[in-house]
Image (cartoon, rainbow, N blue to C red; front, side, top):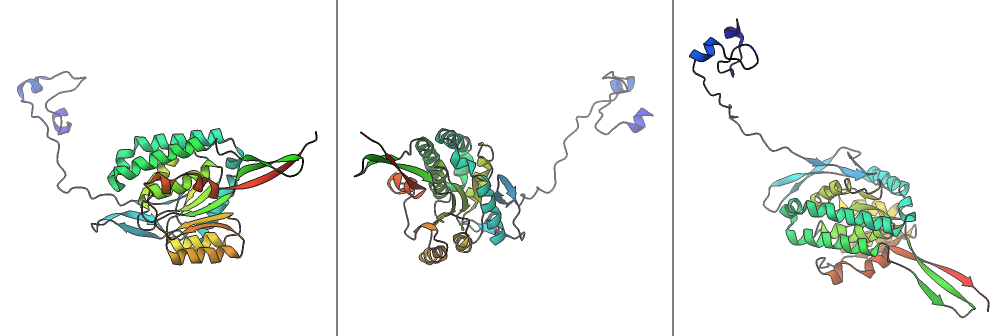
Length: 312
């Protein structure tokens, strides 16, 4: 019966554990060939989700849009966030308020870890946006990791018998709309100083090329970043920025984009007295003089003055 039931790939071996039968000795063994697929498998279409509360989540309405490269090739699809997604992100950011109450040393170690994990995937990111931008992003993360526990206050002399301590503190929950050019470096250059001093952020990445930022949150997932510290909502940049500016539970808003977008953010922030930092002027984000430094740390923090009187 074995001759009738043996599998096709059996080249003549009989029953037992590798013991050849008489039939196997007389029948020549024919080497089996692996059948080739007549039709190549199509590439898998990937839809990038939002990143809220440390998790990849689907958008509220389930919409997505295609991202097309300069050559007309579809690079992927990203989620289309809306007002409800922004509200969820703000709630997640408030839930992570312990980030600003922790030590600067802890924040520094996590930023170093992010930089190290991005460095291990540098070739993957460089294939999308170029090696120069990836290397600059890694260097910028190391820069703000070094600043995280060194952004100290000062002691002011006062006319009374005492001193005034000027302490740098985080603003709280920041909304950040990043520039469309330099999709990874612009993202890192704004997010890193904000979280280095203790803020939690809701980030709207580049509208034209958000895939670098959505890939970057896979780095965050493996870098011990607490849930809710960095939230990413993709979609129409100016519309989402206006929603963030109008939100009463967002303490500050950064916007880098068009003049019309700047005006809309400033007007929307006036009603709730939100602190803003906006710019419609392009920057060379590769240049450390324009893309990093104390300017960013000052905008990411507020000063609390403590008066301490003393006697003779």
